Amino acid sequence: MKSKRTGKPVFFVVFILILALTYTAFFGISNYYGDTKQVYVKGAEDIRWGIDINGGVEAVFSPDKKDVDISSEDMDSAKAIIETRLVNQNITDYEIFADKNNHQIIVRFPWAAGESDFDATKAVQELGETARLTFCEGETQDKVILTGSDVKDAYAGSDPENATQFVVVLELNSSGTTKFAEATKRLMNQTISIWMDETLLSAPTVNAVITDGNAIITGMATADDATALAQKIKAGALPFALTVDDSKLQVISPTLGRNALNVMLIAGSIAFGLICLLMILRYRMNGVVASIALLGQLAGSIACISGYFGGVDSFTLTIPGIAGIILSIGVGVDCNVIAAERIKDEFEKGKTIDGSIDSGYKNSLSAIIDGNVTIIIVSIVLMGAFGTPDSFLAKIFAPLMSLFGTQITGTIYSFGYTLLVGTIFNLIMGILASKLMLKSISQYKFLRKPWLYGGKKNA
Image (cartoon, rainbow, N blue to C red; front, side, top):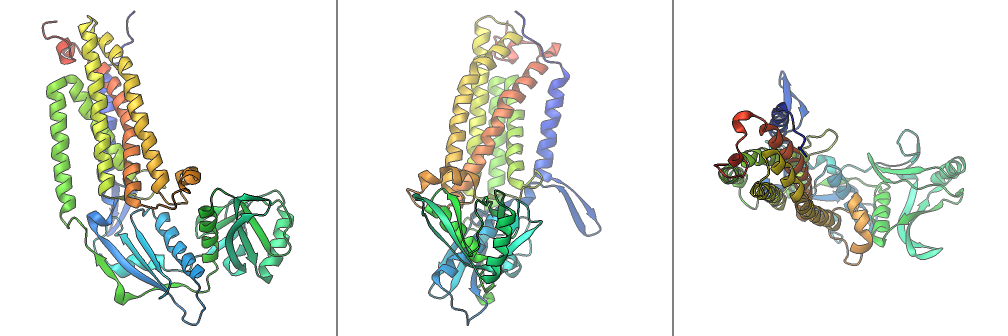
């Protein structure tokens, strides 16, 4: 039975697509209108580098009012404001501490992507504004029902009907009670969403008319989830804004030194080039195709970090994050080596070029998928275990991780993220793109020589 051949132009189509992805992922697409730069597609320069690579800012936030009675819970809620805004900007490499005795919140976070002025005052301005809390009809912010000024208190508790479940208890003031009674009567069995600025915190369904100003939000998986939501709701009702003490602003130097990034880029480029050269010398045409696929995999990883895909902010890339990219490239090399060795085995069985390529990829598929799926699972667990409590994966793993307490470690999260996206692109490039290119290029007469694909030279 003859294997189905792939058209000759397919190699060039895939190759050009990979080159286009690589160029745009690294350099982006932008244009200048006078002195104004219009960015259409973000590139590598839009990556927000972690503190360990590019340094950052240390700021001390304090309430702007001295005559307000500030409790420990208020400080936790104020801390939640800053943490929410950091996460909203995709800043996962940060440190935040609440000094409750002195009513101060110390925050350390990396510079924004493309920062050149290193203005610490400008960097922290948007983190210190009073949060805007709204309760809205449905799951949009079109119709506001309540604002933060209508909330008297919010705290975590146990479900009175099921002690093993956690809830958020909401207390409203007189104005909020009146508004909420009317809204719950009108929106029975419908959704009332809770927003912090532009972030959806929760979207509970109304199942009773609430006239006394005391509501319960159910559906919390853990006590930590309930506490986090209560703090954010309360934060929106704080009677003070957070101001920055300019005298305590500090610029944090990168832990590896200012030139570390350039050194890593040079070393990475040399290492990548050597890997491709060794692949070509060892596996000939298979190595050429593998090198192109690895380039596509690297470009795809950079695209997922830089904000290349519209609507997604630049991801904070740390040293462990770079390690995740390197490890995923290693997995990509392994994927192509397995396929090349299987193709070589098929030649030894006496098969043709087309038959060897088809059977080689088919026989290597299970081993490649097993290895990659295992890494994907590990990556997802790392992101769920060490990500922010608001993330989708963290909520999935919340019942398990509640046994160990909250663990927000941005550097480990960065490692899991880059390893995950790199492995996914490895499956795309190492299996699909590589096979298409190899089958296509093998159709050219001057390249239809078995030894170029792993067969014997005199065959």
